Image (cartoon, rainbow, N blue to C red; front, side, top):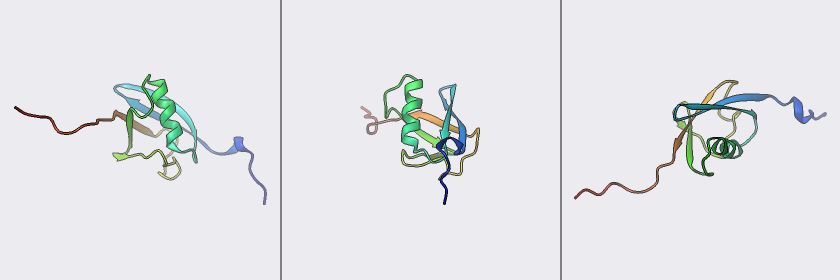
Length: 91
C-alpha cells in the first residue's frame, strides 16, 4: 500500500463572506474548520471566536471538514458576528 505525497491531496478554494467583503482560502478537504476559521477571522481583523460560520444555511462546527460537508471548489461560507447575551430588557 503506497501513501500519496502530501502535496497531491485535493485542495479547494472556499469563499468566506462577511459584511459585504469576501476572501478566498485554499484548504485541504480533510482540514478541520477550526484552523480555517482562525485564518478567516485574522484576515477580517477579528479576534478568534468572534464569528459563527454557516454553509447552505447550516452552522459549521470547528470539527467539521470540507469533505465531511460535501463541499466543492468555489463553495461559499457565510460569516456572522457571534451574538452573546440574553433577551433585551423592556421598561
